[in-house]
Image 1 (cartoon, helix red, strand yellow):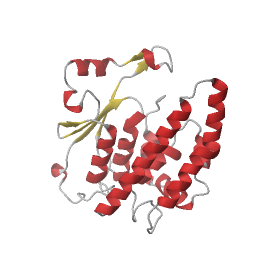
Image 2: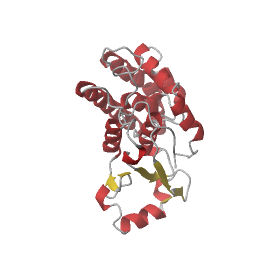
Image 3: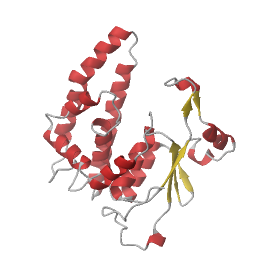
Image 4: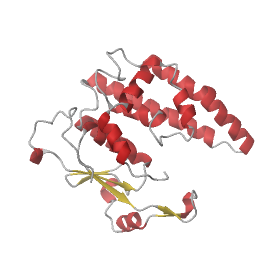
Length: 244
């Protein structure tokens, strides 16, 4: 169970606790695609139940040897039918699958989707750009041949990723800063934080990821502002250490 104070950014912060929804995030004992949702809860200071199902490898690093007995049993019993056979979020018992749908839902409910319809669209657009960057990186990772792959990865961190970040820098909407959209932290900031700066983030080459935004003042300011949030640092300091 992850509990903390009522969120300052949550528009429902003045409601009685009994009126607040009950959130249960069900995923494996891993960061994976659930980590953005966990960070949204942390930044919003929103209590939630963090259910982590066992996930082990017969051979370390070999995904064909994964063992996940609790997930397999729940799926076989039809417990995941409502979420398309996927783990996900439960809100007052209602199940929702797909990590991006969950992130968008939580961002709206927790006040992390901007302050207007246009800001919400800008937050969403930046989030989709993170997806584009990840897709481009996966193409590099899929290159066959050890020498060719190493050369491509070196080029990705030297040129490919920095070029992407420079494009994003140009697209950041005008605002007071330091955050990417509007005057407060949003899901867009967290998406780029987990991509480029968060401990045990998306890229194995953490130094290459950090170097990619050093010449982009808007993105650099936003990521440093996110990294300075005390509630996020509190979550990270207590986060379970997992291999993935």
